[in-house]
Image 1 (spheres, one colour):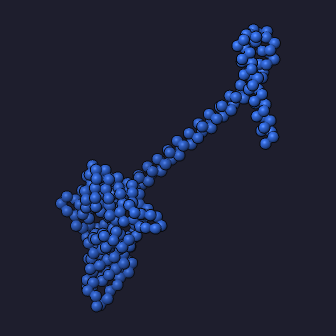
Image 2 (cartoon, rainbow, N blue to C red):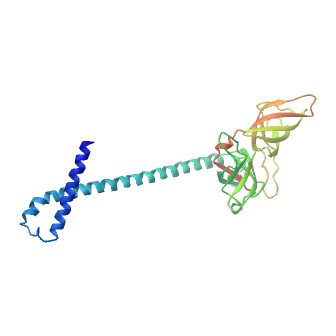
Image 3 (cartoon, one colour):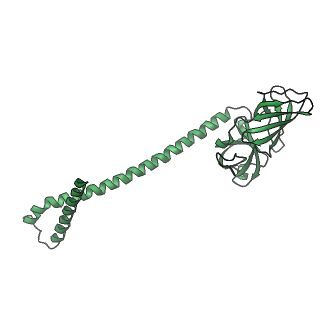
Length: 263
C-alpha cells in the first residue's frame, strides 16, 4: 500500500514539473539548443509524459479488450443458436410423417401463465402468424410428436394450445391394436384416454397416435402423429368404457422450436 502511495506521489511530482516546463517554455526562456534548463529538465519532462501515456494507453487497452470480449460472447451465442436451429431442422426433415414440405419452423417466444416449478405451460406463443400462412386449427409438432394446435392467430404471432391442456381433446388410436378413443389433457405431460369400449384391447406400454382428421384447407391433425404412451389402464367389467393414463414424450416447458403443419 505504501509502495503504491510513493509511486503516486512521484508521478504527481513529475507531472507537475512537466506542466511547469511547458508553461516556462511559452515565455521563451527555454528556447534554443543551449538552454541549460531544457537540458536539465528534459529527462523529467520525458518521464512524466511517458508515465501519463502509459496510464492512458492501459485504460484504452482495457476498454478495447472488454469490447472484444462482449463481441466474442455475442458471436458464441449466435453460433450456438444457429447450431441448435440447424439440428432441429435436420432432425425434423428426417421424419417421414408429416411431410417436410408442409412444415413451417417456428420459435417459441412465450408461454402465458407458465411459472417454472410452480405451474405447467398450457399455451405457447410462436413467432409465426397470418403472414406465414398459419391458420387456426393447424397442428404443431416436434419430429412426429404432437405438441398441440393453433387456437388464435395475429399477423406475426400465434397461440398454441398444447396437448396436455385440460381443454384439449383429440381422437386417438392405439398404434398396436387400432383401438380408438378420445384423449383429454390433464396438465404437465399427463393425458387421459377415454371412450375405449371394453371389447377393444389397450394396455400399458402401447403408443397412441392421431387417427387423422384434416380438413380441405389443411387444418386439423395428420394421421400417425405420436400423442403419448399408455402408462396404465383401468378396465372395469361394470363400466362402459376403459380409461387409460397417458404421458406425452415431450416436456413442454423445455421446448424452444416447433413446426407448424401448413399444407
